[in-house]
Length: 258
Image (tube, rainbow, N blue to C red; front, side):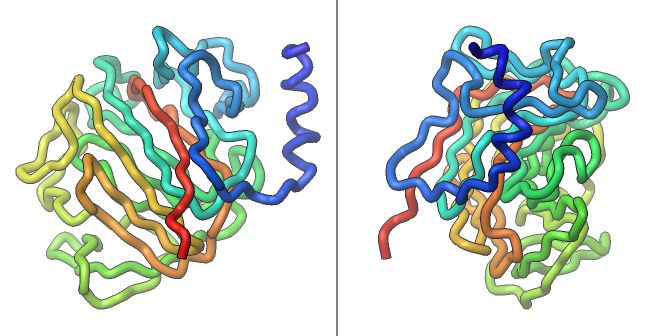
């Protein structure tokens, strides 16, 4: 009966179930299949003829060949998200010579693809060589909004800095604290203080989503943070953005009781 899922999914998603607040650990990826997810691609929508998202040898393989996302069927709120990923070798045009690029979209709401390229309106945990841990506002029907502690550097961009003056943003990017101000969009880019591990090694991304507050960790280090966001729940998406990516763990844990 699994063939019925693509036909029933739009109705299931439109039903409007309450977002799930994890009471215990939830393994969103079971190492076998994509049970908790559906695909939405820029060109092929809910079909995946190029097999952009597959499970191989206990890992999610994102080929990057077509832009889009692997999205959770359910919506979630108030969680500790753990994702372990590593880059593959392949990069596709138009980014073949550019930094490997992907991301985790948080609190995704609205219509599939409303933000373009198959993505939901959301707040992004950026995964890009040299910039993993950046926070991006992904516009859909509306503009997500969040308040950050950040300083504006000589390039005119905002960089997260704990204790800096607070500013509320509804567009653009808040760079993680150590992003190289001389960063260039080139393949294999490495900054002088990058927390991301070298190509081929596993990285651990963590997000504490507590109401409208988002806290980003990379390999155990606090790299970015936002407060009082107007998006407090939604789906979680994993992007296909021209780079090959492997994911071995997607897990939600409950937040500590207050």
